[in-house]
Image (cartoon, rainbow, N blue to C red):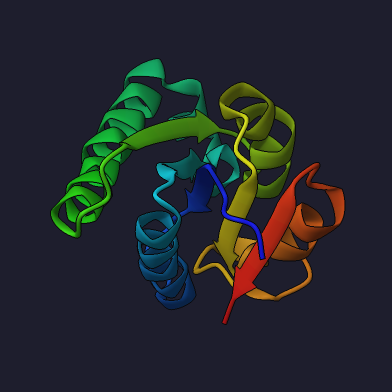
Length: 142
């Protein structure tokens, strides 16, 4: 199997996303690859007043950006040399496939099979969407 140069991993604090993150750290170290950590701010989880409140959205995004830095530090502590983090907004699967992947140009996407959030709790939604529509290889961790 070929080595990957740039690995993108999706995190959302669900148990299997954490498994995916730990696997991505090992894989990045073994392949001497760059690791990009992505988390998505999903606006459909907010009520209409929160979604209309720019201060609320900025606050939520700032919290998520701060939170994702913990993942970045953990990967660096584990010995991954090149690590970066990205926060994007939208529907997780679609945003990763249509916005994040073209922007960061990874050659492997690692994701958990389920999400702790909303409709994505059922496998077949976000992970399946990414596996089906991603322009790059997708590794789904269970």
